[in-house]
Length: 55
Image (cartoon, rainbow, N blue to C red; front, top):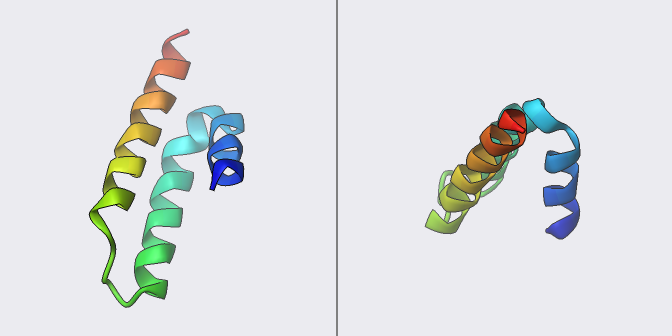
């Protein structure tokens, strides 16, 4: 899991697109039964990307 996060951060401004792609992929793999935690992870990823772009 940490590897995926590091990969997202390394992509910088593309982190949002990656997080959405991963989210959709996981939702497809789990037949739509996606845990709420994944949505929070996506939100954190978006906020991190936004913060990184401001620096």
